[in-house]
Image: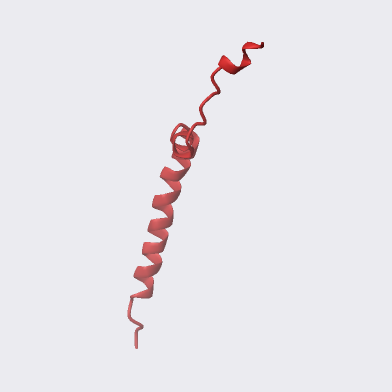
Length: 53
């Protein structure tokens, strides 16, 4: 009988662990998220300025 049944199958790495192990993805998220929030914050600030008469 072959010994293939005794060989352990490699575990599947969870999605969030693979995501957090990728430094380039973390760099992109770290730059993109504040940029998006500041742009949205700026748009909200501009929208709340009262119209001059």
